[in-house]
Image (cartoon, rainbow, N blue to C red):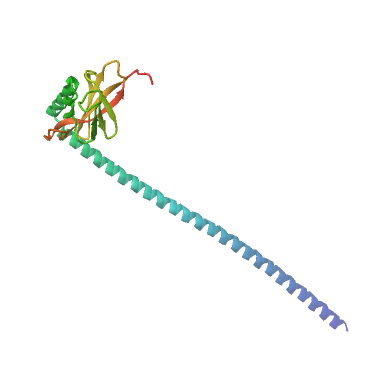
Length: 211
């Protein structure tokens, strides 16, 4: 009969339509799932990036805090040093310090120099023999200096370093360096009275000297 044939055809068409709809729905579902996965990946990358940015900002904040603390400590130290320099070194101190160097400058024998040396950075004296015949050396913690009489000339400059007085003196032409005397209040080798003494003698290259 024709109606059976029509029914079968209609049923087949319906089945095909349902199948097509199911396939389209599956395709849409797959696309949606893929889009969700892409969104998830983008969000995860964004979260990771934000976490790194927050970590970097936190590190920068710590660095800035550390630098500020260090600057505050340095400023406090400088203020203390300035206050110490202004309060502890007076005109009379300068004159006493210059007098010590002038005594060193005029000394004709090594024994006249010994008690001008502070015990602070001093380590030892060196002489040629047991009778204190020279050449003689003054050995400081960071340097050694051969004592030579009559080589120190005129005062050419001064400054203050943490309560110490630093006096720069010119020397004779035969020497390559000028002398920079660092003076502090200290006990002496024999005389234990605290007064201005030479803590160190630095060698300062003369201007125009060959390298």
